[in-house]
Image 1 (cartoon, helix red, strand yellow):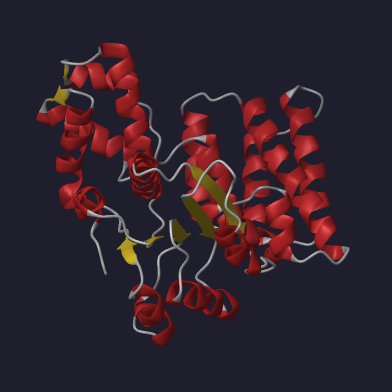
Image 2 (tube, one colour):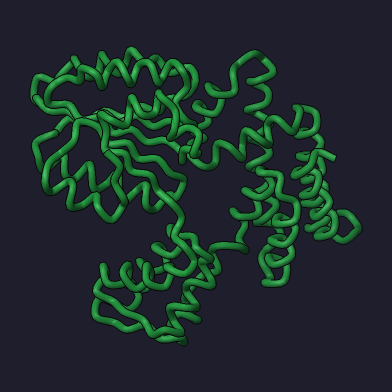
Length: 335
């Protein structure tokens, strides 16, 4: 059974399904959908909950074990399984076998990235979907973003003028999670019953979508050179502290280097990512960086970053921002 996000609340009120499958990369909707399912199952007496993050080395026998080993103090259980990619052959077989004869008083919540059209037409998908409430999540269409923002504000008993809505949409650029964080901040600043105007939003909204250090790092990991350099230039124009940027990039490089060392010692990428708690959308970008770089290239980048840090502190000559641009380009391209 296929559900739209807007249909989920009503479906949960009418009757609970034995399995819910959330498929999508939009983090706010995925979070909201999972929270709604958890709340509905708790209210229905599913007081026990188990969570499993399934990588390529995941033992799918855990699914059957978790379903059959009830707690002494609970007779209803919610089992959550989160996959960083679409189900592989082992996962598909285990899920189909489980769903063809599911245990009583157990609900399965499956979370995966978005599935492409070919996957949704496949035989294995249809075998799983017929036993599930399948909830595909999509990005909000730009033409619907203003309405979404108004509805989100209403959840906090707030409203905003059309100009204020447009500015929030422009600054968060379709990033629903960033928009929700801004609205939470508005609620804390102005309280329920407030109507936001352009001045209020201009003074307090943060440019989340494009220009911050975390966006710079994510662009570098993904290998998006143009976006990374644009972000770095905006950070410079806005007067951001260079040493803070260097510290954040250095932390990321050290983690990449530590992961690469483990991989070169024979550990599979999946288990390395899991041990470093790299999940969800970020996993693909980190994988790309690890595939693009060797231990040696990451070590060179880290040494270069230390040299830039010395320049920023006046211990070396040269334009540190220009040198950082070159390092960012190397991190994006390994050239």
